[in-house]
Image (cartoon, rainbow, N blue to C red):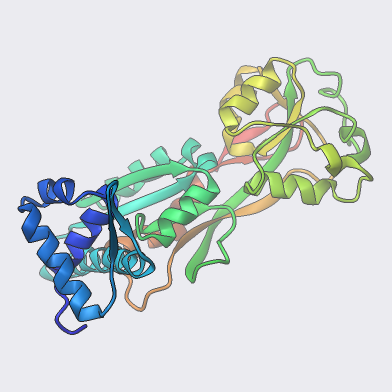
Length: 315
């Protein structure tokens, strides 16, 4: 394995993604035979086949998938090395691939703008997805750092809290519960719920909150896969929802939604910055994490009181 080269790893990555030698060759600016030779040399060094040659294309073997994962990890580390060397040279440059769970898209743009004002030399790319997609991209070295409500357990990560994440019950303006105070858990459980998909942090928090109400988890509610869809469903009168307070700031201000005064809410979770646990932290990511620790909470809309009026304020 000592003779493996970066060119071979780039070739493996291209063939893995395209599944065709000719398409990989086009991406790499090589001929088809040159691509095949790179693969063969790696296979000879490893003593294993990387791809099964079929009529439909190149199908990766277990060894091929392992080589592809290694190629992505090495490419990521080389990018981090470049950032570190530029920082040593005093160039003040760097790249960050930031992943944010869907709830975070309501504050991420302002947070990014604040960071880039302080560190203008950084190139930052943003990915927004659900929790499962964000964790997958972190695991696969497609993003450098993620902002989410609960660090994953399935991969080795470094995580740090940077702010509160309140979860609240919402209803349409004029709802029969909108003027009531200290609504019990049993009373809110009687309502029709609009809920996020299974596995989402908000859904898990609702399930925990309702776990001691007999039978309530058997049919939790109508499932929808985005906060925007849930908000529109609540406004339309399809039910109430349990949702991140960060997602409804504007709707509460304009009066289309109201926050219900349910006992023991808001439920306060936390926002974490999460990155892979590596010995060396690239300077750009270190700067971003420091910014989050010092100023990140300023960009989070916070619930100041769990009552229908004036429910939100900016930190």
